[in-house]
Amino acid sequence: MPAIQLLILACLVWGLGARTAQLRKANDRSGRCQYTFSVASPNESSCPEQGQAMSAIQDLQRDSSAQRADLESTKARLRSLEGLVHQLTLDEAAGPSATQEGLQRELGTLRREREQLESQNRELEASYSNLLRDKSALEEEKRRLREENEDLARRLDSRSQEVARLRRGQCPQARSTPQDVPSGSREVSKWNVETVNFQELKSELTEVPASRILKESPSGHPRSEEGDPGCGELVWVGEPLTLRRAETITGKYGVWMRDPKPAYPYTQETTWRIDTVGTDIRQVFEYDLSSQFLQGYPSKVHVLPRPLESTGAVVYRGSLYFQGAESRTVIRYELNTETVKAEKEIPGAGYHGQFPYSWGGYTDIDLAVDETGLWVIYSTQEAKGAIVLSKLNPESLELERTWETNIRKQSVANAFIICGHLYTVSSYSAPDATINFAYDTGTGRSRALTVPFKNRYKYSSMVDYNPLEKKLFAWDNFNMVTYDLRLSEM
Image (cartoon, rainbow, N blue to C red; front, side, top):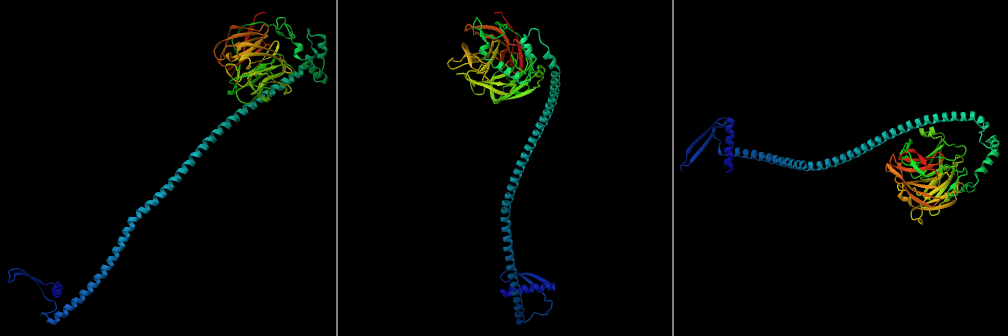
């Protein structure tokens, strides 16, 4: 069969080469349809012998074997190509996953770098904003310092002119003698105030104890060496007169004062002021002239060796008296020499918020001055919170006499003393408050009052009496004010 098939194939090839072919269709003997395909040989005129046919068949077999070998070689190359294609397909299938992982890692790195850059950018923006704020603050500070420098220059010029004026007017004042000055004083007035003898005499005079100067009146009230100082009971308080306002938050509350018995080189016009908001209060502003005080131009700033507490400080006979911070100690600080002259603990006195006035402010110990001298207002555990009064020696701060009242200290807003009478203020914030109690140290009795008292700015943190000017000095919510008074005749 293979030989016949090869023969038929050869005949077909030859027929194609000759381009001549015949197809016949007829039934065979059994009646089945039979197709006969005839191709004429292009080279032979007649069919070859059987041997020649075999030779042709062998040639065809050889050609078929060669073609089969070529086919196998082609198949082998095809299989190799298929293997390569499969490997490439696998590589392509695995490639996107690995690439994706690499891209994810790269994307994560880029995101982290972006976050770092954004964080650095925010930090730079914050630093830039801080720099701008610092720049604005420095510019404001520079402007303020320039203004202060200009103010200091103006004050220095004013001081120089004042010193020159005082120098020009010193000799005539020394030569002029009032008619009512005793003859012995006229001789003293001719002395040179700069000599040592005068300073020694002055020291001897100022060191005389107050107990030798102050005497008891028949009614039991202490009185000064001047005799009757025009004392009486308080019957009227006028409207507040505002002199000036504090510039900063440290002046929310404070104390300001003038010396009712000024000592050289100070005058009745010299004013002192302390802003008491804070934890380390040491600065005391000094104003030589009332105009300087009103304009806010201090001539000197004292720095206390110890911080003070509360708004209870006073100035008397050239010294500042104040309560040391977080203590029951009263300190006498001589302003001219800037030295501490005396210290004294008030026995049993509450301090640092134990028995303050109703508004607080650590006002446990409140110093006061009246026509008779120096006082301290406080309370103790023994008094169970009631106000205690003690008369102080202004030189040594020794307690000369003590009174215990029945007025609860924490129920009143402030207190002051006039002619040996203690007066209390009902409220520090009510616009229409009253002077509600009075205690007479002469009789040891207290009584209720209803003298109107105005808190114009609704936060009075200090109320003191000045016996020289016969006025109340007060500090009301940043504002420094005065009140006129009226006393009845005793």
